[in-house]
Image (cartoon, rainbow, N blue to C red; front, top):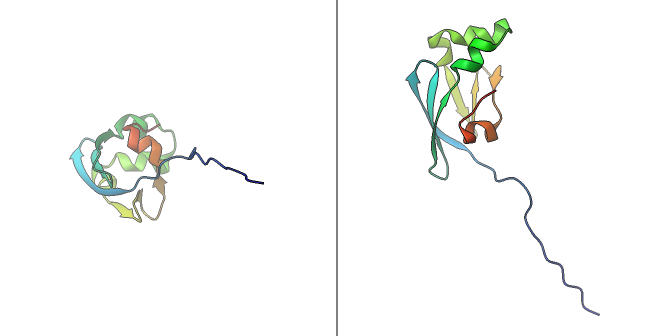
Length: 93
């Protein structure tokens, strides 16, 4: 008796951020490990937020004080972080 199993990957691709460059006005140019580059505007999200902890990042110096750790972009020990799929799409919400 013979059994054939066909495997199809149905998971989500995993991406890592290798570089993030501030462009001013709450925008970052993000470079991913596969070479894709996206400019992400965080300004509308920050301005629309009612959370004072999030709105604090409207201060440009605080916004630009981010870290890339293990391919993830975050601010102040994951105090502010966005889903990788959103960043890859160039959107935050």
